[in-house]
Image (cartoon, rainbow, N blue to C red):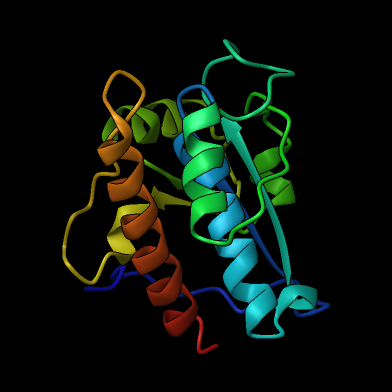
Length: 166
């Protein structure tokens, strides 16, 4: 069910810094960022988090999230506001957690993570209580893929917060 790793307590100010990562930063990671921000806001925990998202590739730097990702979030009462960006080496010091969507992203992140970085790099799906570790790319499919992603990132967000003790 859980990540099997120690869950960080946040930085010295008690802020948990979380970066969500997918390939292009237009479908899965901005949705995960928006859902996680929504849940923390609903629980009155926003001040305890710095939340962002990025892509391992630079295909969509400067772009808004995919319209289907935004529509799925809006349909579920979640606001999305993000401009695509690519992961940078500084993200590994600026964030405590770098949570990615699939094994390809995980390998890319592990390859570029600077030695000595304290950021925990792992699959966001490690927190899925249903055991579905991969958050699949919905880009080439229909709306059902975005709905499935929304349900999964919601479950993962809830479990991640639970493991943080929040």
